[in-house]
Amino acid sequence: MQIKFKKYGTAFATEYLFKNKHRINQRFLKLNVSKNFINLFKKHNRKVLTEKKLFDFKNSNIDFLKLIKCYRGIRHKVRLPVRGQRTHTNAAKKVYKKRKYE
Image (cartoon, rainbow, N blue to C red):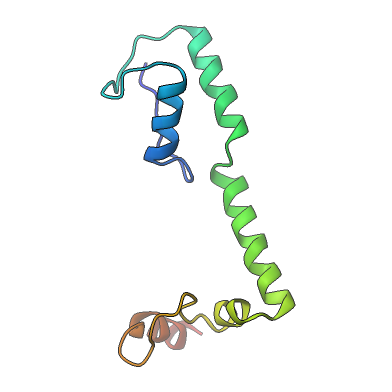
């Protein structure tokens, strides 16, 4: 059985920590694993925010920023770069998409 770590929110760091914790060789992709190990892997994934939970968590944080009308929230609302990038010469694609589809 091949264990897949490719979910939204599980990147190399999560995979690395899981393999270290359970003493699995980092180079293994395919493993002949037992049912106990599969259950252990599923239990670990329940503790980590992934997929839908992480996506909702991120969106709720952005909605909160919009609600309190802070600088970052206003930038999200207007769909401009949030982290201080310049908009005069860069970010043209993001601004162009906003004008084109809205």
